Image (cartoon, rainbow, N blue to C red; front, top):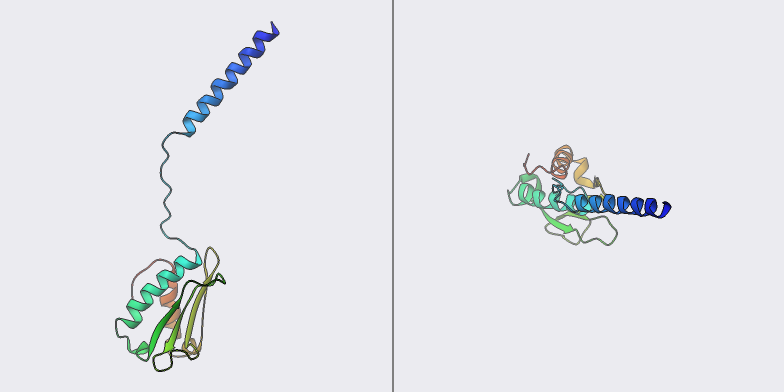
Length: 135
């Protein structure tokens, strides 16, 4: 009688496992991430929007500067630089960089201490969050 009991238990276990396997293979709703918050994707958004809103729009606060993106950083800190048009290899006037996932942003340089510092902070934070609006 014991062999039949064990056979019955094995059969029940096999049927249960088969049922679990079939239900796990069924269609699943896709997982959607609205905004990637990694350092690279965050800085890509910031770069695209800063280029459009600060430089291509001929914003007077950025008239004497140009954008120098450095997104393919091997340090894990993609960044964008705002440099003087006349001296593009000189010291940057603004550095915006991100690190980690979720990204932690930093902005520093002489422009942050000037009249545009508050606006730069607001723009960068808004763009990092996924907005495409200019100020």
